[in-house]
Image 1 (cartoon, rainbow, N blue to C red):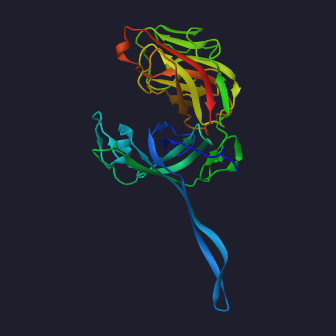
Image 2: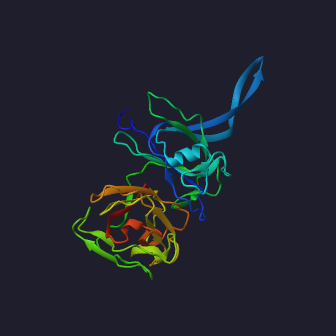
Image 3: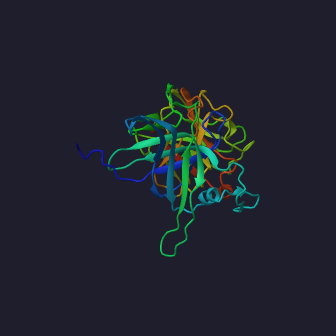
Length: 348
């Protein structure tokens, strides 16, 4: 025996509406700080006894029901957490949602549980189908932080296989304990070019040694005026910059991780990183992830973002691209906004 596997830490949880298939477009969202949680396999057994000379002796036991649930407590009282807890549906009024009006109740989707710790064993649990339910009350306590409770109930799906091992079915998802494995998608040293846009104004793409995070250079994208589009959304005409890469299989990986910095703040989901099986951006990317808010301007920060859907043919990615949304920021109409990206990797 040894102490190497003793583990200390708390999990991270992501959830997205929609089951794990190629038609799903919903992005994962992060529940924030989890203060308590557990993974609970629950199996009900049926025992058989034979009677011999007046006593009963168990000679067989079988499992008749199997389930897995993840009850957890959160303390980030965010807009998304409150809406899901109250099963509230967005209305046309900003920040106002109708309580108990969600059609999809419980909220079905898919989830990722991840434990990365400095003490003990790292692992992730990929859940292709599950139901998110409020679990108890939203507590008010003047002497402690406000908390709420959810439970993720894992659902069976006969169609899901372990990525990059399609002969291995995983009806309740799978656990990966090899989280140290990673793949460099692009080091951002060279080769990026301006996106195939028709209405963008003054977008400049280059590589710069100062600043850079790793290697000898980083991707630099300058938006010199208000970024305007033919149409909204993450599509080829909204591509700021892209690079054609050698065909790369990213299906074994759960997250895109990279370093980013900016000359001014960006709100969440203003920028996206997308991947394509074609050499250049064509239409909607095969898969894309929205960047978190960038608020630590002029400093490098690491973002680790869940890949939306690994069943969407990500075995031969040939293009990686940076996209804007239909409106970056109206305050930038006469300003220069610079974004640097470096060291794009896939991690588990």
